[in-house]
Length: 256
Image (cartoon, rainbow, N blue to C red; front, side, top):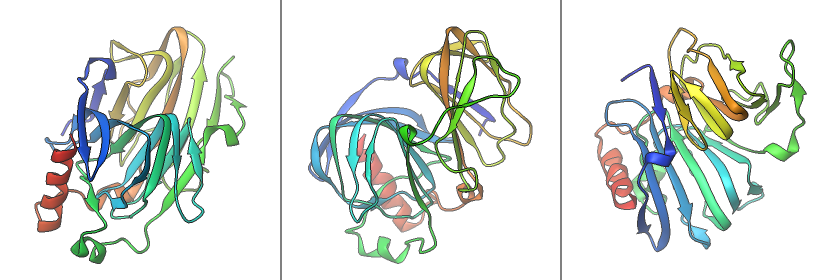
């Protein structure tokens, strides 16, 4: 596993597929095969019910376009929206519509498994967190000492996992602290120079380690970047080769 991964989403091929009657297009952006992060991009066709399931590791789902409706009062989620779950935390079924497009971001291979699986129900994380937020529900705040640069929280600072959106003018250096448990840095608008490579939306960098990563530098038109940082739950779960995990891996393979 490396300390940093850089992905230009524009270079990844799209595949059409279906699972449990749900049709979609998908990009595999990071496979997790080396023990590192797993990242996928999904564009679900309009669907009234994507089946209830869970992932075997913690995840951020970043809704880039469209809408998702979750049951039992979780809320209507529309872009730009964020949905976080701890490992083995079930959710759904949910509906998708309006040109749905989202990133599914894991700290390592997490797979997907339907809650119709009886054994999966015995593995549910009963203390797991499920967090949902809309970017439109928080206000921009100025970044001290950085002219024309602003940020807003996508999750409350005391949530555990951290999520913040930053927008900056051209050629600004964006610095963040070290990410002990891993962080995705997703370009939403404009472009960012990541270790010498210019990346546009929705490309990203994943970093993890005890030392702060090299700053991102915004391109000629500035940029907006979502910083999605895992906490210690990222150390839990994942595909480990156990029977349940093997089934989850096979389900993901069918889905892509």
